[in-house]
Image 1 (cartoon, helix red, strand yellow):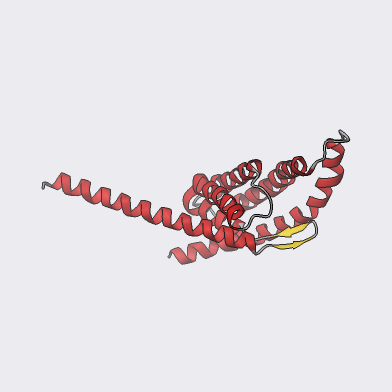
Image 2 (image 1 turned 90 degrees about the vertical axis):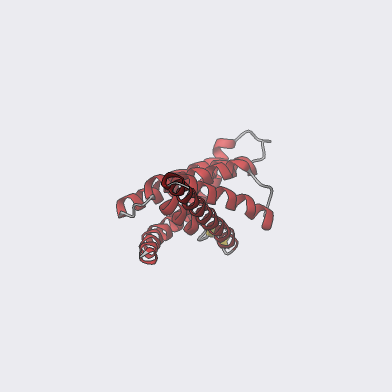
Length: 186
């Protein structure tokens, strides 16, 4: 075997090892997302959970596709492991959007401005309006034809308090998580 073949074989071996480590890490993060989602604090309209932590870690290490995979597959597996209701694909697509935003803004970057921007976009726009829209469509009874009134006076006000709390939790915890990841990495 000449030198080029041995370098090629070593490179292939390194890629396989790297791929195996990546897939294993993502699988652990998906499992963590499912478990943390089960441990949510739920009091009436206020829901607090820490399932965003594995998504933030995946976003920092693997970027948008890694964090999207963790959030989407975690949601699907969570519906299988602990079904609260039927699996609703639009919510999973919204989780992909949230994971993608985290991945685009946090991939190998833990600057406080980017971290804050990711949290504010995800909570203030995506969770407040898009997720609330899916919840409203899921719960709405079309008998009276007043969907807009139901959405703006029924769903949004109930979710605002929960989203404000989750925004504060994520704004505090995300920089701490990213700092801890950097320490562990060293």
